[in-house]
Image 1 (tube, rainbow, N blue to C red):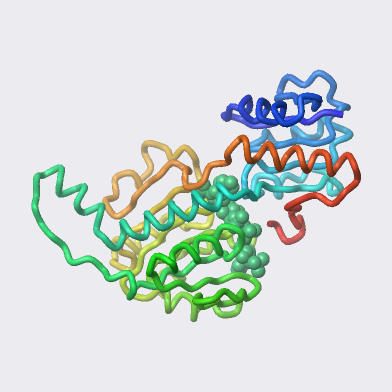
Image 2: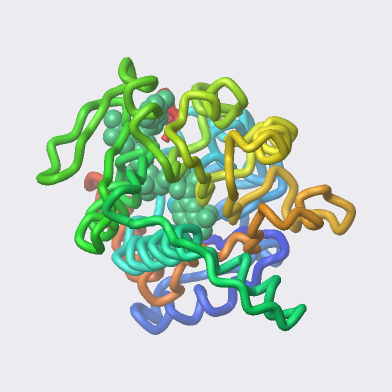
Length: 308
Ligand code: NAP
Ligand code: GLV
């Protein structure tokens, strides 16, 4: 029995080392150096080469190395009986809370304008928006979205949340799938924390931007494919949206020639909102590996039909 780590353009050695630190008896291999493919029963994957899992006839489960599974779900070469899991750990939530809170505060405190002014030695004070009058609307009230909602609320923002099933959270207005327009009308700072599925692909489009309250801002920390890029540029140019903070992109790294780079009304971060910590992830991976071998239920198993 072995546990295989598969990733492109990512160093998997820290993950292997942390797994071995927990249990040195686990046979851990890093793709593509796999000595006995037939021994692989559990894999951990991030940005894997398509079809790669065909090489492991006894594979029973794959864990995403992150919270998202949109890299695994569309891969039809993964047999239906192979179970999928994902990483849900405290530090992923904590980092995402920090990222969204920082971004929201920067938006209402005109941080971008002051960066630009400093380069010209310009002393120009601006009125800032009172946070108690700004409603942050969170699309996706799952593990990350609900943690972010609570963090913003205790920091003085008004918060509402939208998800497939309606949530009950003290002090937060919640909306379900059928109430998207009501949710958008209330929202000034829209935060996308949805999983990427066939239903959410391209959801951040012009039609949606038009329904937001005024002033409107966007923070996308989910996946690049949620956003219709040309619609965002149009919305920024026409004043429908004041500023966008983007951590994720359809093509990553974002190509140097991409029009987003040159825009003052877009803040770009290189997919760093929340990074998987090798130590925390290793502990969950080892737990699920042992559960699989013992025939027990897996933690944070993904519903392949639903797509997240
Ligand atoms: P999660 O726990 O699965 O939560 C997903 C939420 O989205 C749930 O509330 C779900 O509703 C809702 N949802 C799904 N489809 C929907 C639809 N069609 N309409 C309305 N709501 C819908 O996911 P998570 O752990 O919070 O992670 C969310 C995403 O964040 C990940 O998939 C990943 O893409 C992204 N992420 C980004 C970074 C980064 O560094 N930028 C880091 C980690 C994760 P229900 O509650 O009703 O099921
Ligand atoms: C990062 O994007 C993740 O899905 O954990």
